[in-house]
Image (cartoon, rainbow, N blue to C red; front, side, top):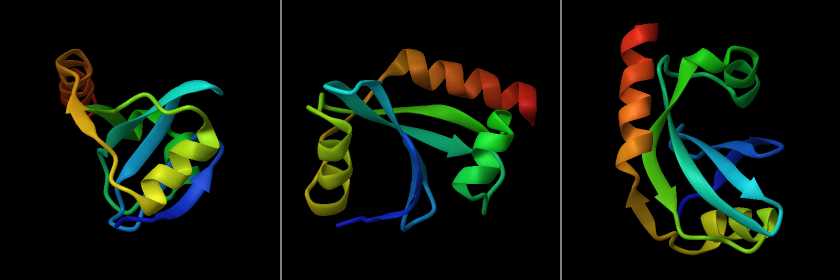
Length: 98
């Protein structure tokens, strides 16, 4: 089980230091993993300089609300899948920033 370590609105960092984003509407959202281009950043650091993060392509199943998304991440397994379009976008962003 992984827990949210630091959260600001829809962005949060898990205990292992990975960044996630709750994407979509209040009643129709999913979790999306982000790859930090520089390690050790806080949520505030990433939001201040958004280019330091890129989509990894890892997305969750549809979740009913932002509160449920936090609870699913904190307490039960989330079903992850790869979105190849998002993954390609993240790789392209990483190559530009680095």
